[in-house]
Length: 172
Image (cartoon, rainbow, N blue to C red; front, side):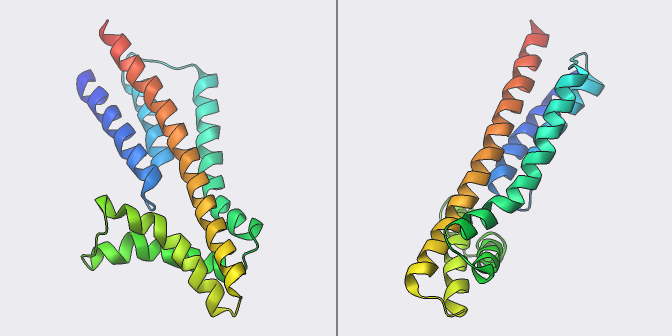
């Protein structure tokens, strides 16, 4: 039974890392769930402090991820229209295009990356902003999206390293 839990934990890590890149899939909490799974259902244990620290980081990163693209857009001079456009662009790039059968690149990666950028630009232009500010807003949205994604991926990779190291160590 323990081997099944180990396998499930590894699957959680993989799905978590994928979820860090694909919006709508909570990658960071799924990665953290792998650690919790091992702690409560196998002989692998983590200290209460470690579980609390990883849990707090999980919550903080999940919350920050919602605000980093908005911060990036505003930091580069964007308006609420750019923020809304970025969000709509992300949804279109991730959900609508694949549903319509338009998958650009591997797993729609181009839609994930270009959606917020194009959406912020269109949102700014629709609100009457000049080209220069619209481009800056789009770049800010993209920078914020990439920063949030990198933060999530780093967390999941660290948790994944700890989990996989502990699984391998349990075999030795």
